[in-house]
Length: 506
Ligand code: BLA
Image (cartoon, rainbow, N blue to C red):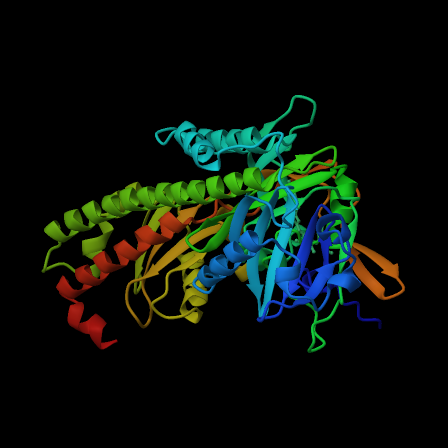
């Protein structure tokens, strides 16, 4: 049987493609500032062909002042993983004005230049300041995201700006949008995780801004293509990096001619992207791109703050419950007796359809309830999972098979109360049939070419509806945080109950 390996998406070496988008020029210098590589479009910039430039000192290529600036910027780079930027510089000493990005790639000094966009220059500082002030902090989250999309459209002038948010399974959804009236709405559409492969997500944490000025645009190759040690040049931090052909095909299939994407990073993780589309080639100046990137960084902090505030509110509620329970725990009561009176209170702090307590053979429940037999089979599953860990699932049938029980109660969150045989406080959630609209049927398109089978971007993005059944709402980070607080409550109740000694011995 032929084994088809479809890892081509994951393996695409997007940082080693050896080219830049032709609107800018890349110079790579050795440590002693001799030109080691240059993109083959250099004549338009430095007015000399690659062969004339390679091996020459930077002082023969750049103006004295600009080289002086570059050298001093280089000192800062060692303190960060990013790069430095300079705007409106007369790089070649001939009166033309360029914007410059500077970073290190291993032992190479990389200088990227592009012509300054004079037509729509902007003062990035004041623009970002007013963008932030327009965001508004006391509005609902959805309105806040929409306002952010509007601000990014304001500064980039792209046809469609989306806030694309990653979901726990790696797929993503357009959660906010601002668009020109001429283009369709993508709001609410879902995209599968392999549309943005893992190495791309990894890279987007380090390099937070990507521009594809023209999906059919020219690519300028680096000359020579390989480093002195025979390896390709790592272009991870480049701002002009040419983009994977697979992804260009994806955008062409969508009908998009230019794209921008800006990372939204919350708590060190890629939370989402501002994804921007334009239906004609579009290059916006480096100053505008920088303003949009800076805005995204400040916006990311605001998202983190909102998530943190929500967590604090949730924790405060759980702590209040803790205090209430602890104030009235009876030292004469058993663990079961002490907990069963609080089922209603537990249900108030965790959003759920039912709650139950299972201690030895004693079982009490409130709201949506599992039968004692179902709960015992659930306990078998729970006892097999890691001790003292909170267990959660929003699709129990994947672990226990389909049954009346797992279809009726697909969502379970279980907090272990003791060690062996384990007792549990259980939260249940009923089924929620979710209708998901995918942008195109998310099936993997396999194509057979000279190198065997490979995954290709899908050709149709026509909305495709899927009804997701047999699952409950996801348990969120705040749900899990509350259960952490409740675990401490449970531990203290156990310590104070009459059967404490028995339980601790187990
Ligand atoms: C990269 N895929 C990307 C990027 C986005 C998406 C935003 C970042 C690059 C950019 O700025 O355009 C996907 N774009 C989307 C999504 C929306 C959007 C989901 O606008 C929703 C609105 N893609 C595939 C398949 C493969 C693939 C099957 O569909 C692999 C075979 C690969 N996507 C792929 C690769 C990159 C990518 C390799 C990296 C491109 C690069 O940075 O060089």
